[in-house]
Image (cartoon, rainbow, N blue to C red):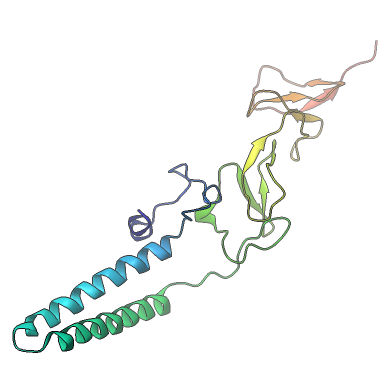
Length: 184
């Protein structure tokens, strides 16, 4: 899957894949591509030397196939690395750098980039303080960073006016302007 994902340029996010959510099998498309390339190079090296297997001793054929496969893999991987675009800057977690693990294609759900750092989307908060844990959860009562006096409601994705405030135009669901409640 890693090989197909990296070759076809699929993003992890539309697949609802949480790159920080699996501890045993990490999401590494480059690793999948390298493993697939290694396998193909070894297969080609074995095929080339297999032709000579009838006339040469088997130990020479096996050594030749191994060396040919490794040389071919090193050449292909080196060429691929030299031709691939290098990232200009890595995005970092708000508390510490993730050393290149974070990228726009690996962005977890409800996490956004702001000034070179990962941050939860408005209304969401980190589930843990660990630097490599990018999971977030909806946090009712959390004040909006974008809209003053608006807080996250109990229902995920919904907002409500802060205490002492009402909606300016309650008929428009995406209008988050509020005004103070008039004192009587």
